[in-house]
Image (cartoon, rainbow, N blue to C red; front, side):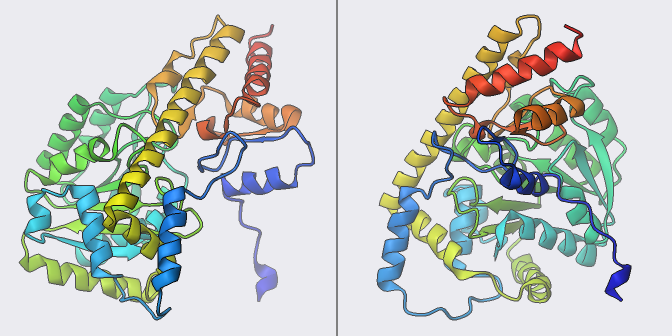
Length: 402
C-alpha cells in the first residue's frame, strides 16, 4: 500500500530550515523561518514568560483536559486584546473565542466554520501570501481565488489592481486580510486604503477573516488592531485569527485563538457550539501550557506591562535592523533603489531579489532565504549584516552583467 506513495514537496520555509541545519558552512546565515532572533542569533524566552511560568509552577494543581474551546478567561482576555477593553462587543458578549494551537489552527477552524455552516465556497487570498494560507483553505474544501497585492516590480503595494480584482468577488465569498506586518512582503495598507477595502467588503457583502499573527510588531498593540476594530465597530461580523507565537515568543507552545464577532448575543451560543463541534474532530481540546502562560501575562498588570515593554524592544530593534540593512545596501549598490525596504513593517521584507539570486546566495554564500525573495529581518545582526550585504551586492552586480 505505502509503496505507492510519492515524496511530497518540502515546505517552502521549513524545508529550507532543514537544509540550513544540514549545511556544514560555519558562516551560514538563516533568513527563512519567521522567528525573532537576538544579536546572538537566538530565539529568546521573554522574561515575562519566565516569570509567568514561575507563578504557574508554584500554583499549578492539575494537568487535566481544558474545555473544548479552552478556558473562558483566556477567551475573554483575547477578545479584549483584539477588540479593545472598552469595546461594546466585549461588554455585550457579541463574540465567541476559542483557544487554538497557534494561528494555523485558528485559520482552519475559521475555514471549516464558514464552509460547513455558511456554505462559503470561495475565499480570496492576496498574491503573494503566507505559503500555508492556500493549503489550509483548500484542504477545508474551499476554492482559493487570488487578488494581486504588489506592483509588477514587487517593490510597492499594488492597491489599484488589488481593488479591481476584489470588485469581482461575489456576495458571501470570504476574504483573507493580513491585519498588520504583511507576510511575506512587509507592505501594509495605510488607513485610507484600509477604509476603501473595508467599504468594499461591506458593499459586496464579503466575509472577512483577519489574520492577526503580528499584533504589536507594527506600531503598537492597540494601533495594529485598528482595521479590525474599525470594521466590527460598524456593526459587522468578522473572524479574527490571532497568535502569541511572535509577540510573546511562544513559537513551540503553539498558542493562539479564533474570535468570531457575531451580530447579537443570541448568536453567541450557536456560534461557539459549532466551533466546538469542529475542534472536537480536529484536536479535541487545546494544549494547556502555552495558553496558561498567555493568560497569566494578560491577566496580571505587572506581567502585562513587562510584556509590552519587551515587545516594544523587539519592534524597535527590528525597525533599526531594517533601516541599517537598507542603508548598507545603498552604500554597496548606489545605482539600485532599496528605499522600499524602509516602507515595510514587521519581521519580513520582500528584498527585491529574484529566485535565481536567492538560489545563488544559498549555493555560493550559505545565506538562506525563501525563493520568493522574502527575508526575515530579525535574522540580521551586527555580526552578519556586512556579509549579507556584500553577498547581495555580488548577486545584483552579476545579474546586471557587471
